[in-house]
Length: 339
Ligand SMILES: NC(=O)c1ccc[n+]([C@@H]2O[C@H](COP(=O)([O-])OP(=O)(O)OC[C@H]3O[C@@H](n4cnc5c(N)ncnc54)[C@H](OP(=O)(O)O)[C@@H]3O)[C@@H](O)[C@H]2O)c1
Image (cartoon, rainbow, N blue to C red; front, side, top):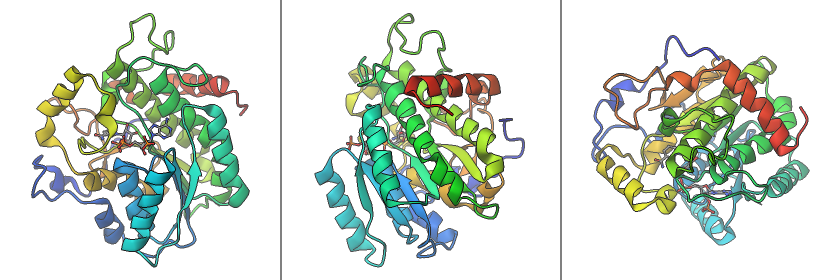
């Protein structure tokens, strides 16, 4: 995808102040209200991964307010059942979400989850690839991939491929279906190590592996849009900002935890972080403008010289058709799926 030449940033003035308290950044629910979509999407089907905590929970809460039919993936049933109870209590007129068990670090579990969905649904309008892990110690998924690339990218890549037929069948010219994939400002720290995906030659570094997986998330979104945009299926990637109240940092080393603590003053709430995801999922702007990286509820431009570490700009390697295509093909092989 070519990098966006005229970024669309309707909320830019709300992001001038980085203070986390008393600021004016929109929340996910505010985006639904601003787009006048409360209770308006009863016919739409939305699947969100990783809704048991953090941004996924706030994304589910806001999308539930649209009246859409939600499918929520989980690993911990008790955790997600409590969330569904809470969603229904705060929005009783909303549809009861359906829960689907899925462990992204197992391709077999992803296949079973996709089958469970497809057994119940012939429609999917929006897929939100939100689940993720960050900075975990070196490890492998069930299928032998480096853990962060395997969980954050390969698991979601296979999920998308298995759900692609219903996404394609559900999109129309006036209302294309969408795949929103959570990337991160961390993508700026690394491209893809095509000759060393598990970082054994370079020496495993938890945050470098996370950065690589987040660039992979962005490349998948760009590739989805390039391959299927003309068939009414759009791909978008999102950086939600820095949110330190979620569970994402649970596996970080003390040193990495200190690094995040040092920039805590620019953090936002999970409700504010999910605003960008929800805007990507719902704004009519993206019916015609896919394949872009979105942050601060706006289409990102290139990294500015004075930008903070977790700021909204994209790195020079973010839009690289050759690398995107290389990862796309390699991912098909890795997950054992034919195009
Ligand atoms: N927080 C930030 O500052 C930030 C910044 C940039 C990007 N992001 C991205 O935003 C997304 C959500 O992050 P978050 O901050 O909300 O994190 P979080 O609070 O840790 O939530 C992560 C979600 O993913 C699920 N998950 C983790 N590993 C999984 C696996 N192997 N299989 C299936 N589900 C799994 C978790 O389920 P369990 O409850 O079962 O663990 C949880 O529901 C991630 O993709 C992250 O990279 C976050």
